[in-house]
Image (cartoon, rainbow, N blue to C red; front, side, top):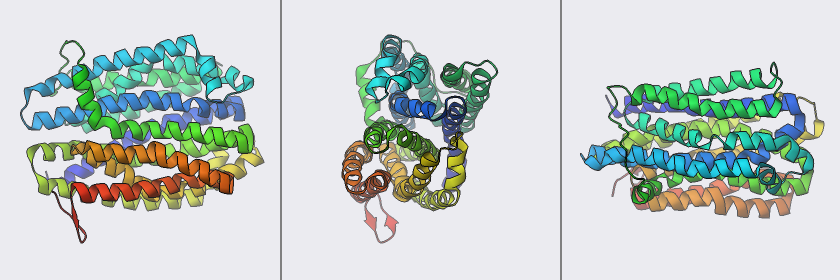
Length: 439
């Protein structure tokens, strides 16, 4: 099968799968807005950074281990077989830390993230419940990455979509007919990765699978080797959490709880857009790692061109859709008809989403760098967009322009990072005219 056909197959299935993940976050936001109003959205948005951290650790271990597995398997190295087992065991070990925190101090976590007494009361049970399922969130990322890298992207897509559908359906059942409120939303979210892992096992336990679980002591060396290549996935996930913490702090000062609720609408909607570009990035990764491992540099160049080109087209479409539908999107989550929330959110969506002109290129670009063992460049670019640039831009622009400055911080940070990713491409692959070379 040609590079173009393989790219279309893997990327389309991964975009659908990643959209599935974002859909259940939107479902949480929608149902919580119906049940708890603006306070519920505020509580959800305040604890999303913890959720992002769990996802980020799972993504780093899963994506990084799967890349190592794919490259070593392409080179015929028998050591490839140990990376899946190692990833699963470390997912359990690190997940246990989150379980302990969720049991011992959920109220203090919500308060530390900016919740007042009213918000802590709304959000503490939600936080405790989803943190107790941290290993399953991590295992879901790990299993999905290995299934995708083992030549079964359709199973990975099905696992993500069906687990997301499960979450949406049980969000409604648990929150309304059973009247569990925020606890119901947390249970639906927490059980969805269990479904995802179970579906991935359809492939992992089949005769087609080349991935095997082998009992061995967890290897920190293998974990570190995997995390080096999974760092861009980590930062890609954690950046939304870091951005949320920083923005929540600034917005609480500028606009109070209503402003945070408006940011919840913007942030959760942006997860859908980010999912599209993560789908392109993760769909490209198995192909890039396989071609790179085999030394097929011409095929690497083709996949890079396809990935970057697809990202640019999707960026324009996402921005246009938000400019047209910012009002209706806000109305879906504004069940109370809060005029102040609506005004903040509509403006926020339109300003914030201009950043996806650059964010799409950055997400796909850092994925390409990781997949071809350019870990240092991927790390620098990821840290720029996830931490350094976004925090500097948020504080400076909010000081200069208030709430509009908060919304513009994301586009400004992504523009700065795009320059760095462009330099990384030139340094790693080389660029001549409009051609991507390979050094």
